[in-house]
Length: 417
Image (cartoon, rainbow, N blue to C red):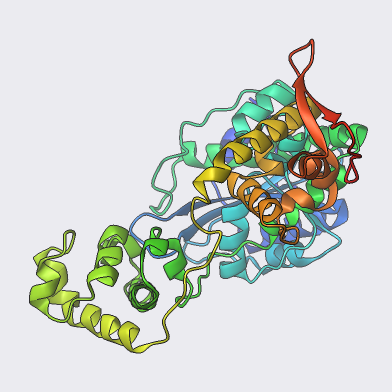
């Protein structure tokens, strides 16, 4: 039977340790060791189904052991009775001297920011690092462990009811496994990035994830509805009021926004601007139960939107000028060629909307758009070359090895490269 040092410093079997979560004393002892080690690996289990915001169900943490052996691991259960005091862990996460390591941590950082008030400043995301090390932009934790460390882990309990108590031994063992090798993975990826001179690139890309939030402004959520550019200025104002009402209702009832009224129906309400319950009954997606319970509130939101300031269409949010699509596709081909050569995930360098914005700005002789592709290291990788191409200073050719080559156009001198 494997043996492991637990967060309180005692040695017990892995099987026995899997049967318990940490109490206050164990969390304090773990935090002391993590502070001495200077880093902490964190993962969370949560449940979002049937709620407005996800419920934090379990926090698993790991740090280097004092003797250099297997990592120390603690499981903090905020749903246990009594719930442990997790402030020592929150203090670690907000300390800039402590590196916080996660994998695909956007949801975790947002959840812990809301629940624990954590503002993380020293952050390393192994999924982001993997993208700069040639493993793709969305590499899963299990796949990375196998590819980088040669380890295979079980994911048998990933989709279980984490909000039910007691947690099973299988769930607790699974939770420990999510952080057991996370620090080793971080070290291996960081070493590869240092060798390639890309560690700073990855750390820069981690900053937005560390700052992620799941708190939304009800007055701005209408922009997430989709198809709003097909609406008139007045209809968009109605959509804003409808979306704000739906968001506030979902918060009050602790329900997913889609369970209040679904997006297609919201757009249709904004388009038709109904003034009676009978008008609402003509809209597909609004069943009688919604109309009886929410109808008057919906009509009030419509009236408020009609009386409000119209919202003009925002340029650049649609699919772009159809005539620009071939140029956008050409730009995309150049990006994919350069990122493949550099062993970078294309999504890290440019999205389709980034390329559309660049193409549109060049065609209209507008200033360079504020997109990531033209900033920092991305400009060096392909952004500057892309501008030369679109300005006609270079042309593309296919080399003998079937790679795309950028060649100076006769009589023109590239100036961005």
